[in-house]
Amino acid sequence: MKVLVDSNVILEVILQREQVVLARRCLSTLIQGNHEAYLTVGGFYGMIYTVDNYLRKVMGLKKPDRIDALRSIMKQVLNKFQVAEHDRESLLRSINDKVFSDLEDSCQYQAALKEGCTWLLTFNKSDFDVSGDAAVKVITPQEFLNSK
Image (cartoon, rainbow, N blue to C red):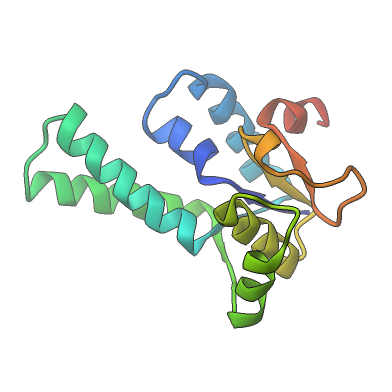
């Protein structure tokens, strides 16, 4: 089964945020199971920016240590996740989809569709205003774990 993972779930683990235990359990179950885990290029870019800021502001790392740590973290992410493809047409569908008021979420949803993902895993389920019979089911990490 293919699952697109919103960057907020991955960042929860990397940055040791409030829901780190749930996110870690969910990602471990996903990756160790018979699932193909995907992320989007845009989500990856956003994670680079967020993790770099965290390493600089919270951890107090300076170059070159900060960049070395950032490279290491992002390589670990890429070792666990496939990258969902986008093309001009899927991006156009994303920005023209009136169901979404958040175009970034629309891009993630369209990437999940293009990859043939069954689920889109996110902590912000309410941002994905799609019907229950949508082609890609939007679920939270807890819902994913409950399905196992």
